[in-house]
Length: 137
Image 1 (cartoon, rainbow, N blue to C red):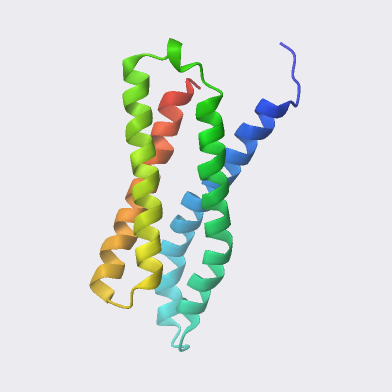
Image 2 (tube, rainbow, N blue to C red; image 1 turned 180 degrees about the vertical axis):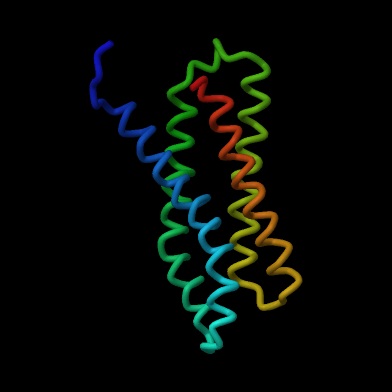
């Protein structure tokens, strides 16, 4: 087995790194925000969320575009209908995750923030899992 660092390796590396920031960052924020809110410092949780957004949104963009690049690297004429279906669901979950996260970041209504935060995270996690399913690991 030989190892090489080529454009395909770079594409996959960038995708996995960006997805790690997007999904893993949400997990960290789920653990961190209640602690920050409980610290009693006004606005600390909101500041942490804004700081996370500065990293999360570029990561989402990189994950989205490298995901398209990954799709273009697949010979879809040889892909099974099952693979295509799972990819379609994964792509839908990515779009839902980004849309829900966007609404979450711009609304000031707690109920909507809660619903879109949960929807954004669960859809990101689902897309993450399906990425492994279609990768053929």
